[in-house]
Amino acid sequence: MKITFKYIAILFGISFLSIAIFYFMNLNNRRAVETQTLALAVSEGKTIEKVMGKAAVYLLEKGESDLIRFMNEIFDNDQVIYIALGRSGRLIHAATKFEGYLPIETDSQSVRTFTSPLGEIIEVTASMRDRFGNAYKVHIGYFIAAIGEIHNAAKKNFLLLTLMQAAIVLLLIAFLFRFNRQMSRKELEVQREKEKREKLQEISLITAGINHEIRNPLNSLYLSYQMLEPLLDHANQEAVFHSNSIKREIKRIQQIIERFSTLSQAISVRREEIDLQQFFKDMQPVWAGMARRPEIINRHEPEMKITSDRSLLTQIIANVVNNAAEAGASRIDIVVAAQKDKTVFSIKDNGPGISKEHVKYVFDPFVTFKAKGSGIGLALTKKMVLQLGGRIEVESAEGRGAEFRIFL
Image (tube, rainbow, N blue to C red; front, side, top):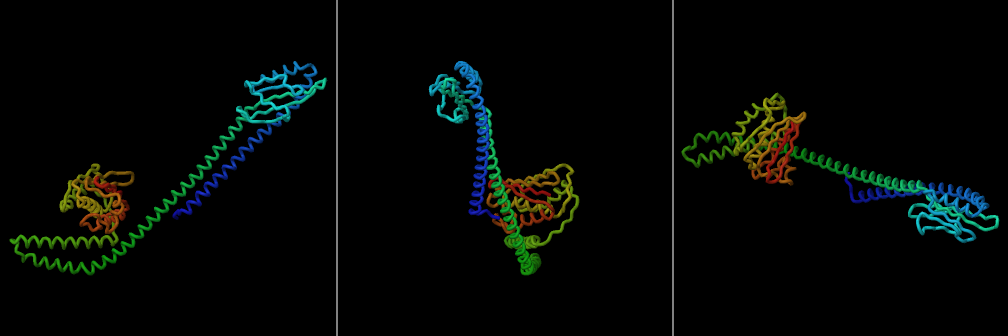
């Protein structure tokens, strides 16, 4: 599954639409909470208005001073912001917690609400007449701290829910992109494995042709060389030089043919217990026969043993070491260590290294970055490692050498 531009646009569109829907749903819930809270406060205000009206009528029977004293006692309450008493449209008494702040309306309803710096203010207005027919209006403005707290909590919850829903959507998008990348990598791996299988099939056909068309004539050529060699004048240095060159090149062609054959054939495994100290002693003659022999240092735990195929392991180590030597390494360090349930062979050289662009192709058949390479050695090495149930990986940078790690 590959994400196209159209798919991305649809995905983002759905995501932002989801966030918008969640946003407005939360906004409506928040407003509903605030509206219901305010409605309860207004209902309470209407009850206060009725009680205040009856109390004011009773106190006016005794005189304005008793009503004013009663209002001052109400003003002492922390939630009351202001009070006012009017008679026949004139203000005769007022008090406020904030100097100059007296937002009364003479023609206001019995209960009204309005916004202030403190929050939502509820103003209760009670109207009555004394026994002389004078019209009085009592105004009490107060706020309920719980309303502000409920509003603030509703805002915080609204913001939190919106952010959480946005985060969920974004995480979903990230998961889809990650899933897509993983699927793309899997598809690429499958495609590369398919290409490798097809290439190995081609190698099998080529090998069959090589065995038929080249091996037999080459064997005849080598046999003729062996018959002519004793007849050469060994005092003639030029003749000896050319004779050795012919022999060397015939052997090189035989080795290439053998590698072609091995790469396309099934590999049998014979496991046995291997003492690493003895194993590396046995490797000395192999390294002694190398055209370019670098300094080779191996380190491992004393008396360390592993179970593997001795012949395949010898070829694997020899191939990697020979590859480093041919690349120009003057020193190769081989470190063997146990790692969980695996044995790790680390083969590190001080050669020219492999560029970032080339390192991912080093195990591909017929891919080589050396002037005289065939591109078979490391491909065959990987096949043998896999046959042993292990894996091989390489880490390198141009100019910094290379390190091959073999997990068995």
